[in-house]
Image (cartoon, rainbow, N blue to C red; front, side, top):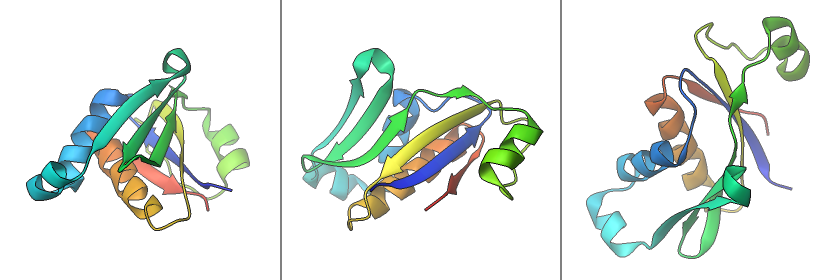
Length: 120
């Protein structure tokens, strides 16, 4: 079972945000030594980040953030900024490479004016 997270952002998390996150999280030396691929799936329904041919992050298509009442019902005590218009479900593995996926998600969310909430 994958680790589940949700990004709550002002702008949608997209492939451009993921590419920027890769450049932010990895050093130039790591980028030069590590094959990284960001690929869209199912006509944009999802995007995956692969490193060394292993999926480290899967990001589903962003959707509008639900109302505060629905957020509380679904996510409980997670605090979401009022300007966070977009929510994006994301998944990483529990294997060691999943840690880089979490870092990439956090960087992509920050670049789009938001935060990532890790649900377990």
